[in-house]
Length: 351
Ligand SMILES: Nc1nc2c(ncn2[C@@H]2O[C@H](COP(=O)(O)OP(=O)(O)OP(=O)(O)O)[C@@H](O)[C@H]2O)c(=O)[nH]1
Ligand SMILES: [Mg+2]
Image (cartoon, rainbow, N blue to C red):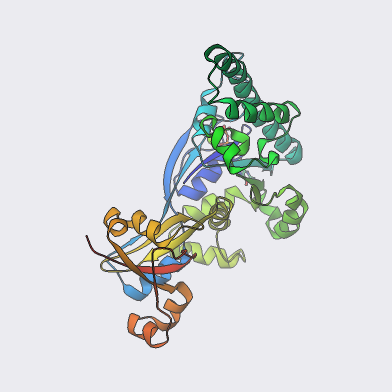
């Protein structure tokens, strides 16, 4: 999974990037430097399973973060897409960081501006392709791309009316027609309202006031104080625990925020615990045991016999395979079983 962090200059993008990555890139220097990092997805369940098995190795799922250059409303040249847009188009989702901490913060205004910029970038892309495509269909008489043209026209109308493509409710077929364009306003969005330290006690109320921006299945919001999270991320684990208690927070806000991105992208985790490694794997919701086996190893998919599955909670309660069996909590499933979030799976295969 790849997430692109975007925002206006000095909104706290690098601060948030440091908070999720534990890195210590310079903040506040107006450099608009671009950073990348692959981070381990925090997952208490994997840690607890590892506590049970004491494996040699614990492997978390991974997410790549891009700390992109700021949106400034200026392309390199008129009609030319800034590099940042190319980068962003390869991302699975965008994280929009909004300055809600500075004295003159205008969070809602800034959010509108950023969304408008993404709409504009998509509009430019549609316009430059619409005429080309029309001409090509006319010249060659080939009708294969007529479907694509229809969807592009629909997109053009929405974008021209300053609406994101996500509101179009495109069908899966329509989305397939335009997949190659990687439109920004079709990517799921996570909005981070970056609030000041002294606002943290009010964060639930602040969250409520921004909840109107949530769009089921497309956009979610988080209220985070990036600066504190960054400082906490730089601490050793036991020290961090102390501070969390002092600040009266149960978990890092960025951990919750990463979990949200999973939900938004329709992703779930399952675990394998056999042998020297406990490991978390990421799959799309609705994936079958057969396909999930292939994520672990192609041989598992090719030679799939069965999957022995127990839910995470049952594992934590019964702790061993014999105990799970005795309690009838270990299920033997076939290829068609739809994997659930938190399943602990042992694949039986034969190649
Ligand atoms: N008080 C407060 N200041 C913050 C917070 N987050 C960021 N800042 C400050 O805002 C300034 C900009 O932060 P950066 O993380 O560098 O912002 P940026 O969006 O990466 O900036 P550019 O890359 O230059 O566009 C720094 O001085 C940060 O210390 C926050 O939660 N609270
Ligand atoms: Mg920065």
